[in-house]
Length: 228
Image 1 (cartoon, one colour):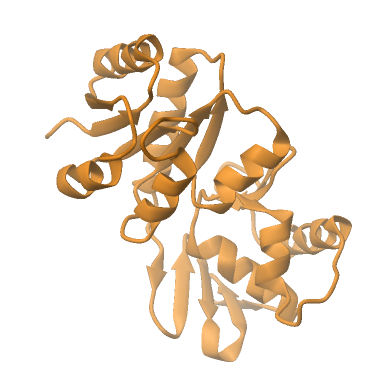
Image 2 (cartoon, rainbow, N blue to C red; image 1 turned 180 degrees about the vertical axis):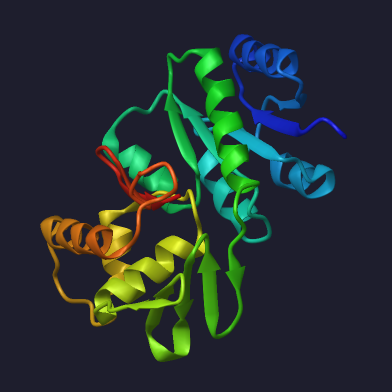
């Protein structure tokens, strides 16, 4: 079995090499880029399994790279940055990042998060076609607005259905409350964060727990929700 490859885009050599050393010691192959101008081309050519991406890098910034990569690839992306404000985390997640780690950080934690995200990616697949979306034991019949769990129909409101459809289409991806509002409502109405929290609470009551007793929908403190 080939070793998984991680591309690290980081302009501070000490940080890049520290992360690379820990990843290599954990069995990964690592490619380091110290600036962003050729990052997208390198990712297209190498087709890595994971991308660790600094936000503030010369050549092409991390947000732009993330947006461009998301146009052709679903590989997991971790933002690694000194920007710790909540709004920066939200922006990073909105453009398609799977995780966000602020400097200073523990390289062991980075490796642990990489492994966790890769396990999620390699976990139960999402089956999607024009009429159905299935993940674990949940199936959404898109054209009929129906949710079925282990053969039993679960009654969802249209808002709950649209929200669950967005979450279940990308397991592990964190959605901010603002993004969930966009998914749930198609009439540009003004909706509060508390309204979204209420919808999630109701969905949790209706959906079965996982085999280990956890809710299917997870809260990410200060950011939003994901399904896993």
